[in-house]
Image 1 (cartoon, rainbow, N blue to C red):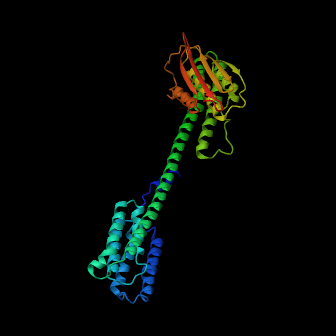
Image 2 (cartoon, one colour):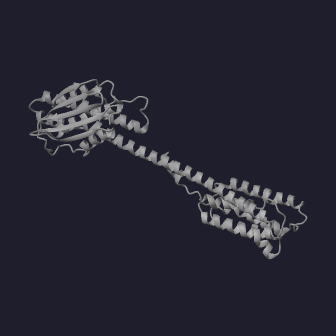
Length: 394
């Protein structure tokens, strides 16, 4: 859909004539014949002082109309051709009538496609040719000054109206392009959000699986019961990872919108998150102050994912697998703190990291106007701290 909008917005206004527009062009030519030739022939019956219209005069009018379907490909060329045929008809002193139909249509195409110099030049040349060329050649009388002024005013008004139409079309095209760019940015932001959600949802469970797999291998022979428990945890963690993965992919396929398979990430599930971490061998203590039940949706999800990713990093990198999670809900902000007593040094993990853990947490915090910091604690361990604004807080 976005691609279609962009393609429509970027389509050039002077695209060549194609077989996709035959009906409009046929109607235009038919209208030109009826107006420029038909009405002029009727008007000629009431102009005995003019030269009788003959085959040559009709041919001049018809040729200008016949060139109109080519104006999309060669707008300036068709305008020049219509100008020459119309001026030739006019100075030959043939009967007057709506003989400017083809010329006006050609001029409009030139203006709308942005050839402003050609349009202005045709207006100036038209003012001179239609006013003075006939008298110079001796085919017409010198026009009165009022007629010259009236013709000039009519030409200026015609050009002004065409410029107004062109301006509105340009504005509409720019607005369509702006909407398309906005849709593209929103789609890109949504892809980044889904990618981050996928990383946060799956990486935590994969890390727990990795830890329990190591425990199971280590205790398989000596303590089979603990190895069995580790395998049971692996089974549960892998199931949860698959559920979350299917839920996120279901959003992309629009298959799970009515019945999502995974619970919504929320601090209401903090106990479940801690329980899974404790089952994986971490010793996690939680300290919560304030009401967590009425948090804005974006703050609630960001806080849960930051804590989840922090515990994942503890499981991957800390020498000592214990951590403290502190959550403080104030009137203007939600403050998070995840501390571990490990070394604070990154060790080569058995499971490769996604590479965007801390960066992803920082992006989540800053995306909602919050702040984030992470780094080694004085003496020993590592600390993750985030401040997420609530309501109108900055």
